[in-house]
Length: 348
Image 1 (cartoon, rainbow, N blue to C red):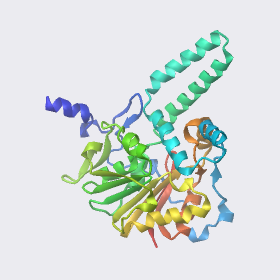
Image 2: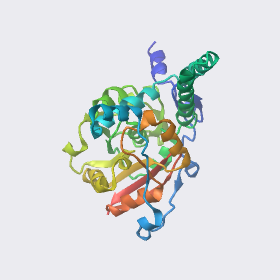
Image 3: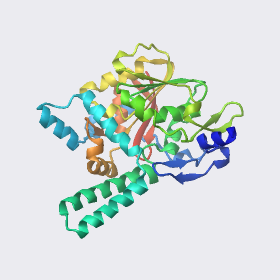
Image 4: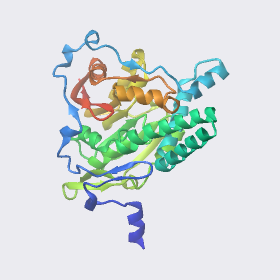
């Protein structure tokens, strides 16, 4: 009986390498378990000398200006701009709902609703149903089929080769903590500290992350690869503003995912300092931001009511890298994966 429970909670093992499977709300991907084809998943090192790059040459990031109806309605009702913390709280709840959907079932139901309203010439309902079909179809492609949001093969390619042993990992603006869990699987035996100032991220986004999701990582006992699960990891979650953290220079890796692009230029130096101040000497900063590409612009347009509650930019890797370089970091690795730019850096 104990074995049956374990199989239910940890359904995949080393026997399942190269297996990929579509579940109702996400994709399981155990392909490239030994990270032998990194260049297929991470297009790396486009810039050889960052001192030769300047803003006049590359231009500024693309700002996503179309806001969600929920934010616009709030601002009409309150006659003021939505506060930053409120916008983040609204976004987290909106975004998390989509991770929990049974996408095939809901998509089938939405299509049936569209046909039903079309047959009755209920044109207002037809429009609403059609918009829902389009949004679900895009989410199905971006998250389940393409696996662009979690992108385990791309993220592992970005994270590969760090010179750390049992690292302490700090994740700033952690949400559900996916990337820190992937890092912890690849470099096991240390500690992960997740930080977000929205309690909902701890109680729902992290708590509801499926315990059955398999992370490909390392087995220190054998020197080979291994499948890890969330409940096998040493994770602590802190709900607080990053600016209030009392940590010193004590982390081997400081990580952020989709953080830098939410701050206008006048605040980007402060964001980069958050990464620097908690690092041990010789520690790594690992960052990603959404890529500026046509598919990303389309995603943030169609999914505006789900995604667009806060200030947001889309960057290319040169723009992201220049922010990092100008604020005192040596870039060790840079490039892009499916929908994200990625950088590994150390302070000068």
